[in-house]
Image (cartoon, rainbow, N blue to C red):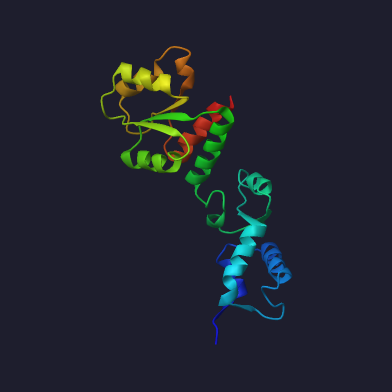
Length: 209
């Protein structure tokens, strides 16, 4: 005898919990004859087909204002999910959402080279992991000596420089970047708030000017 799954539980595991979202998902599965309208369970043999069908038809999205337009532009039907960890765009993470928003802002402004001055080793590693595949990065340890010549080289190279003042950053390092004359200083954003999401939010604000 083949194993089967409760349909409502299976949908809930994917964040499809609201009555509207459940009805839309079930209607899709019914139209394709993946589930039986008279049964509350679905055979395990149909799970792969059901998963592929929902992925093809719907864009799972949370209620964040930045995520919904992306869902509408995807070519698939937006399907609200809860909790937001199931959102295809942000995964429920403020940092991940900030990364996506930042990369989109950089693409619009043709920003491809980024220097980040400061931040803990762990945070620099996180930024490398999140951004490194999409743009060129230079991560500057704010606790190590940095000469004015090296800072000038960073500024000449970069499209954008984020000086993260609320983190592990010595003043003698930061001033090499913040005291540069125009036009180089127009690339520099001095961030005074902690957290990756705050860092990237300040960068996005700068890019919108």
